[in-house]
Image 1 (cartoon, rainbow, N blue to C red):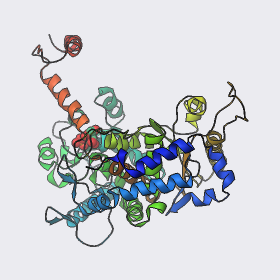
Image 2: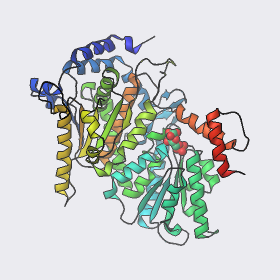
Image 3: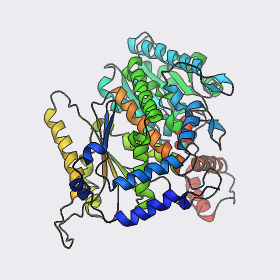
Image 4: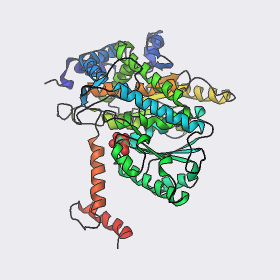
Length: 529
Ligand code: F6P
């Protein structure tokens, strides 16, 4: 059986690591004045500079070989054509179909899924147009002013991040709120500010069985009926995005207001589906289609560009170089754009839920590191919080800097300061301040790698391309590590035990470990006599 770490290419990379571990990135620039041109590329409105990496031409060539000798070409084709690549859940993985603008059928289980995708897009269009124009009214005849998305994980992070990122395109008379946490203070804080007559709730849940979301949805419905009156029309104020139409209808949502999607859309890959409804409501259906178009263009690039010029493939391979050969444990995402402040959280779920795996697709434990800890926050704030450790600490943390070039009119000076701060940091991380000889407390060692991703402008289209880029990066890494990036059994275990604990709170059950039982006794004291 194929063994990744015993492959010729993997061992060549180990040798190259030993040979280049002490190379200085700045020396690569000194040796090759063309390095920036060679190690940067543009796809549509996205520009990637990957020259500030501890990656020599030889290393890059060998990483490309690693991709060529992997199952990437085959698995990529399987994903796009709807083969079952999520083997543990026996499902295809077809978020790319949701944004396809291409012609032609896409068969899943002998059925063309494109007509259903098109039907749901039309449903999203009709509904978002009606709410935005004021044609859709609540129980008292007033138009909707506030939209509350109730969902968690993939049913929250994608639309939440995108609505904030695209705030400047938002309908001026609509406000958006996202309730995810089961902590009652989250929903309470949101509801306190709202008028039931003008509020629309979207219950976003793929399964319609997630405890947190159902509890929040029930609390919202109770609040609605208490404040609007028992006879107020729940159906005019509650809609759902779910694959579980029956459960949504049992909750009281009208059949025509259940926006369907399908088992083959993973939660963390679902912002392109009905889960993206808040985005269409906020920026309009045309804007939502532009988001899909940007993702579609990135899909086409990922499918067609040779690996050496393929943005997601390059980002994935450079990540593998650091994780598997330099021993990097984490990867920082630092957007220099306040509108992208939710991006690190979104990418954290995308990457960590996908590639947080230690058994391969042959059910064998892996003997190499897989997905990194993904974390981060916006610059320039991060500069005054965690950058110190990145400059002078003992850890090796590759960074993705992300920014959009176009300034907001009237704030050119702010934008200039923002971008120059980012460039200064990337430069400082690489160059350091050590002028030779011993390190002292005042000097920074430098040689700390980063990518810089520039968007021409933060438009729906470029955001779509950016998210699809990271989705494919995560996919490529999963393929090379031979893991299934599309299940999440660890999360399922947590959900299952939460259910067991709450159902047995009265039983004085001895089924749990002594610590859990001891803690449960303390909890019980607050809820039961
Ligand atoms: O966080 C785990 C997870 O299973 C995610 O994959 C999913 O996005 C989230 O829970 C919420 O699940 P649902 O959309 O079914 O409520």
